[in-house]
Image 1 (cartoon, rainbow, N blue to C red):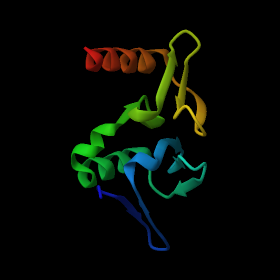
Image 2 (spheres, rainbow, N blue to C red):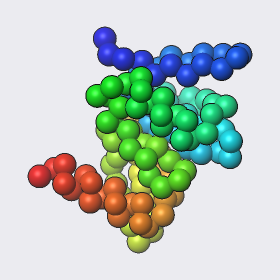
Image 3 (cartoon, helix red, strand yellow):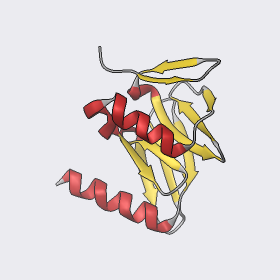
Image 4 (spheres, rainbow, N blue to C red):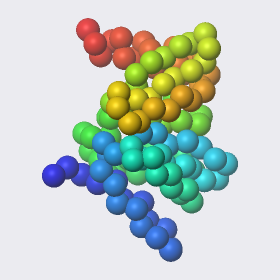
Length: 120
């Protein structure tokens, strides 16, 4: 069994396997964690704080996640399609999970280059 990401506040605790997280988006001083089963969790942490938790708790599994611009952290395993011109990214598992998100052209260009390098 792998590591879990544990996010704890004064009122609740979330313990989730990294491969169940599709993406995390910024919502002001909060973040929305979207799970592969469609559940959405509002977290009382900013995206930068979540990013630090991922890096400190998940060790090598933390590399599954990539920050896209100021407002998104996505699970690389769900990246299905990137369109820089339309500023769109589709996250999918080719079965039940399918999300279309917006991101800046520059952020998507950098992500595309990163994935191309990894494929070589």
